[in-house]
Each structure stands twice: as structure tokens, then as C-alpha cells.
Image (cartoon, rainbow, N blue to C red; front, side, top):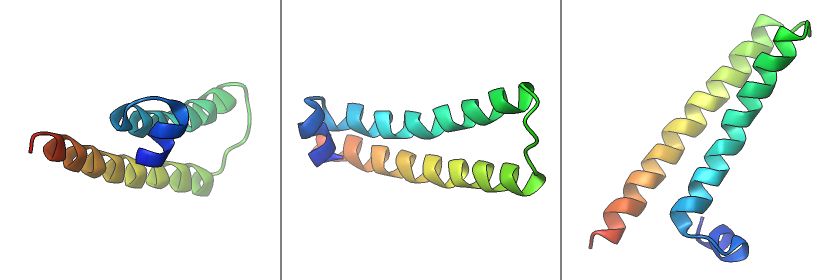
Length: 72
């Protein structure tokens, strides 16, 4: 996150949230594609949802660590 923040000229927290948003957008895309009639299999849904759960947990743990580090 720190290298990404430097490259994007944002704070590390902003860079982290930007990375998280990428995964949220991918979930929106899936829902919109489904609404437009694309056939998405249960396995595809499962994979996308599980990936998003794992990413969200990891991003929140990193965010927690970054915020706690700032307090020191």
C-alpha cells in the first residue's frame, strides 16, 4: 500500500481503500451482468463472493494495522 500510495500521490489509507474498491466494483459488474441476462453459474457466483469476502477481511485487517500504527 505504501508504494502504491507514493505512485498515486495519495495517503496509504487512500491507496488501500482504492484497492478494496476494485473488488467491490467487480461485484457490482457481476450483479449488473446478471441483471442484463448473462448466465452466471452458481460456481462463478461462489468464487466471486468468496474472493470478495477474503479480500474484504484482509483489507480490513491491514486497515486496522495501519490505523493502529499511526496512533503510535
